[in-house]
Image (tube, rainbow, N blue to C red; front, top):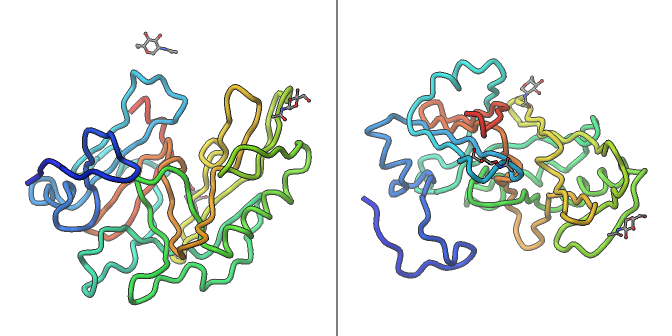
Length: 247
Ligand SMILES: *[C@@H]1O[C@H](CO)[C@@H](O)[C@H](O)[C@H]1NC(C)=O
Ligand SMILES: *[C@@H]1O[C@H](CO)[C@@H](O)[C@H](O)[C@H]1NC(C)=O
Ligand SMILES: *[C@@H]1O[C@H](CO)[C@@H](O)[C@H](O)[C@H]1NC(C)=O
């Protein structure tokens, strides 16, 4: 079952439609489970790829992905019996690494309450990544402490910090990765967490805070060039580095 939206609001204003991939029973992904099994995956090509190339969305098992040597998994959490209609895919973060250092972030920051407040979701429909406070401040400060060589510039809200990299051949920025509570590690290439602003030679951290919410979100910008697997049979998230334009 799917239908026409007559009151499409918010960020998706003007879009021809919205394909629901959530955990709820009405989503396209959930409805297809009886046909294709309990998993789907997508591979989002990067922002700078040729626009004649499309990203891929796969319903059902993808054998090639499952055989990928660098496919890592972390468990989904929450969304249990009591709130099984919950549409989001929650993962449990333990900490975050910047420049090879594991940051000291109070573990309550990542807590998902029984009532469904807080926690971290992975979302294909949110662009940038958001971290709840105080995680965001700590992460931003860690980047600013690590980045010394470039001139800090303002004027690209809501993005910050931003740096002037005019005339710099090889831009070097700190590593960034997420550590999950079950021991899984997710390390990202720099183009997944810094945005190059054109035509000015400026790079900005593509991570924002959530001052009014305790929900953290791993957005789609951060997922570029990973094949992302939602395995609802094993209740786990898979991610494998991939040049999505070539898939
Ligand atoms: C994008 O792909 C099309 C079709 O393959 C090709 O004709 C075009 O030259 C490509 N553009 C760039 C900028 O590479
Ligand atoms: C970056 O630095 C260059 C060279 O010093 C300068 O010309 C340019 O205006 C600066 N850009 C910004 C956005 O500050
Ligand atoms: C997958 O996990 C291994 C072992 O923890 C780690 O070294 C590797 O960087 C992870 N892959 C990604 C893409 O983060």
